Amino acid sequence: MYSILKAEKLNENIYLMIVKAPRVAKHCLPGQFLIVKLDEKGERIPLTICDYDREQGTVTIVFQPVGASTEAMTALQTGDSFMDVVGPLGNPSELITGDLEETRKKKILFVAGGVGTAPVYPQVKWLHEHGVDADVIVGAKTKDLIILEKEMEAVAGNLYITTDDGSYGRSGMVTKVIEDLVAEGKQYDVCVSIGPMIMMKFCCLTTKKFDIPTIVSMNPIMVDGTGMCGACRLSVGDEIKFACVDGPEFDGHLIDFDEAMKRQQMYKTEEGRALLRLREGKTHHGGCGNCGGDN
Image (cartoon, rainbow, N blue to C red; front, side):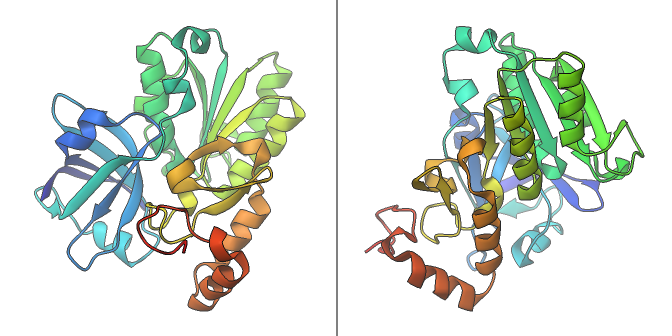
């Protein structure tokens, strides 16, 4: 059992938990995710690691309920436990695993939307701890939906908060802030965008205009998290990739977002999943080699 040391409701629809998981905490890096399971009959739920403490043996997860299992998670309190916590899974951010001296030369922009602030935070924190200050845009519909502002402010080079309704910080979507910063003379060598699919799509369209290479996390489309279900299949350039085993981060300028979003909607129904399996054949699964689904 994996004890929940802290359970906090960040706003009306986003929750934070600190979980005792020493093995995951010992080995994880920013960009990776884990899978939690409530009980023997529970679903596997992939969640990006928001923070970790190797000495305390803890990992922090942030989530919003989107189905029965995550809705059940909202009832968990400090002192409760998960039956299973598996990880770290997925590949760490390239900014973390790449040449540190080269990374220090780059001007980096992070763009976080809603709950996407959670996976952005550990990357910005790691970079800050290694002498790299990055600019960060955090966007949400309203002030009440902004999360981790103080934590992000402590590690970001410059933090720009924006709300769609103008109730806090700047007014407008994150894409407007990108355009404003470039107009003000800011230059960036790379952008990392994490948030809702539609936000990442338009962020990539914006950064492409300014020739800013952009990385996105496709964690939002994962379901099983181990390559078995085929939910996170996507087109990256002329290749078929799977967010859980090949990612979760990819070159955002190569992703077919329209296809991915349409596929995400189809996957929600049994009929849609059957149609996807038929259309995609052997490429439907992530090729984990263990489930038999790719045979």
